Length: 201
Image (cartoon, rainbow, N blue to C red):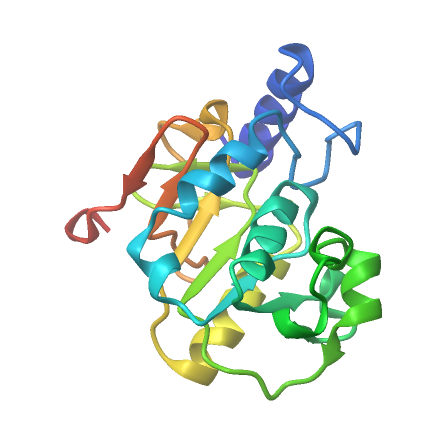
């Protein structure tokens, strides 16, 4: 199947099975899902997350729990703005104590964050996905912003591990990729952690 066919299959499956949650319909989005909070809590157990003083995270709905958790854990949150229109936002946890949930939303991040290109190296990149395979090939919405975000971080700081939080149904047998596509290092679902074997890539 093509990238677009896989995306449509996943979006349709998540809607039909009642896995998808607000905002709906999930078509042409990084789909939010029941269990996103649980996936975030499992991500919290990653050594990369524990060691990180700063976390980079995409702005999509299913990763909002990751952003809130990052701030509550006293880590600096670096967030891409939607479609990278305003570059990056940095939120210092000590400035928003008690307001972490609000600050983890897009509107809240603009209110409490600072637009800047000067931010610390993140210990972990968290990105959203529509589908991922066990070789670390990722499909986003199809507009390329997720790949651009990851690429910009790596160009600035060098190698940084990349994780994604998804529902189990978003794990596919095969996702087509091109040399321009950024790879995932760790897949986190509400039930498991999958570390990509780099010798397969």
